[in-house]
Image 1 (cartoon, rainbow, N blue to C red):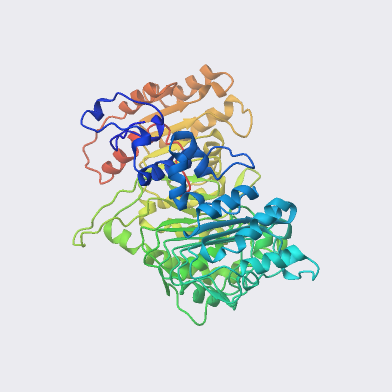
Image 2: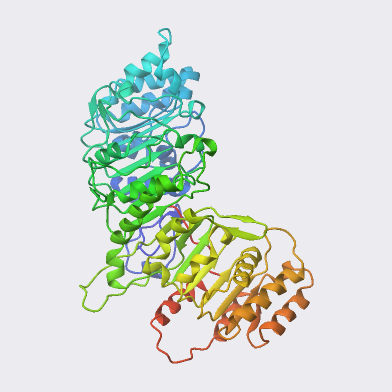
Length: 604
């Protein structure tokens, strides 16, 4: 291996000598000639990139990676204690002993799987050995804890009591990271006090806390919500039972940079244990200052109202990444859900006001998202924000988040018509009244356009480009427009339509009906119609000819490849010389968005 400039990836040339013109002025060294400190860094990068499968009795992954790339691995590993303190205990007693011998003074990471602790004698012995050194643990991860057994431990359960006694050895002042995962077998069984594990404790240096499948009492003597906390994940868990408790807990962590709350999956049982979404009589909205927050993830398909309440009491920067998921599928008593429209309308009004205040810097600057995506009961940004500065305003920096997702109400389709009640419309008003959303010029519709009432799209008057990734949302949208005398997208110029049919095989008449309605409603403004995946429809040539007949042969083109698509982009021309303020935004949505604006969502 050679030492290379930053432009040349190191990990891809392990064990190789490479002739590269970029190394002309670099000093070429073999990997074994590097200093121990540099080698340790290289090993950690390789370990992160490769993640090799490790046998049960193998050494820790850092060590096994080290042995694969350097002849000096024994010498280096003996002197670098941090390589031996990655995850203790190991599944092998011998390797656990060796790790503790090599890592005699440095802080280490403790990761215990309770199922293994209970089932494997070797793992149990290794864990008991590590318990004696827990005062040096900097990171603690405990998996698969049996909630019911901890809540009412049997006096004859020796292993469980040794587990309790072992964890009491943790020196909470050293712990930087803490993860507690309850077993899925006992999901939401009984409240669990973390003091059972750590005793009355304060964690003055903790920076990262993850709670999973835990109902924690608010008045616990184990104070994990420390002033030093930077990352907080409360997933499938309940850390407070009321809005006031929520506010008091979050006021204790003012330096949070990363905050996730809710559930990544649809779990109706969670709602019965969560706090009641109500307006606090003790605290005003936006009373929890989180000025350092960079990411806020409020997750859960059924938790939209809960998360609107949580959002309303937080005060954080407008450019914080915001994922506010969830939908109100029904305001009924189904599944024990007692929320009704009457009971939450005041909450919605509070959330609307807080959203407007939160994004006031965006409104003042004139910044906006040029493209929006509608899919899976959500509305999200689909391209880079346009950052502007309003006349007379201060030199504003970035005010829009790099990623934004809002949940929208679930709207059923009955007898071919969109059904949405007053509650759904009022919830949608939360978002359609925000200028940085309504100024969008490009809209992407995925399979679930029927989950978003088309009536609310009237607010998006700047739209000039529609993209449908499936014929089903196009059929639903055009059917709605045909049945209602409403002006939607008066400036529409470009239509991009995929003939993929996720709902099954459709006849040619379904496709041609879409063409007829677009011709009737937007025939005067449309300049370009791009058809993609036309081979999905039976009688492809006849359907394409039907589109050209109804919309004009000069407007319609079929995309078979990226070259065809770029040629189609050129059909639009530049044109009209009107100097529209959105021209810059349209250019923004072109380029990377040209290839059908593929889904670019990704978790941080």
